[in-house]
Amino acid sequence: MIRPMLAIVMLLACSLLGFSAAARLGIRSKALSGWMLALSELEREIKYTSTVLSQALMQAGARCEAGGAVFADVGQMLEDNRRMDVYEAFQNVSKALLEKKNNTDMLKEEDFACLRPLFASLGKSETDAQCALIEDVRERLSARRTEVESVTRTKGRLYRTMGILLGAMGAIIMM
Image (tube, rainbow, N blue to C red):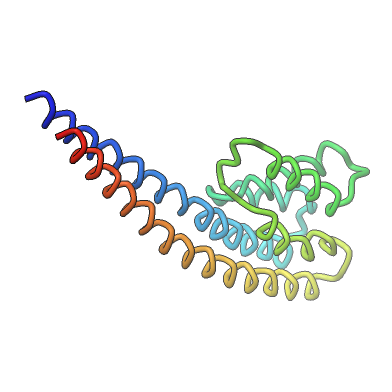
């Protein structure tokens, strides 16, 4: 009586682990989508308002949930340290996020590399040039997100299948 119940628990536990690992893969894609939304908000702030850059970055980051912390943190760092360059603030924020052991958005160096050209020239050129650069970065992020979603689908399927198969194998061994 106990063995069949343990086998069912083993199957469910392994399946749950596989499905949760697959779900964690989707977080990175959501963060990249959040960056794209933040870029749209930043472009709107640059085009239509005369907001200070640090405030514009904080507002753009606050308006999107996933991934917006990067923009908000850069804006906050600029607000706190007025002598700091935008690119320097971005480098500090990206380095801190990449070194963090529990990188909740699961972002990688390649993701931050897409934003690097934007932050290197943000605030140093006229409005039209900045908007064109934002559009270029948004296209690169879109391509990156598509690539990440493809990997997420493939690995997600693998993790789910492995969880179920390991659970079934454990259940069979328990019987």
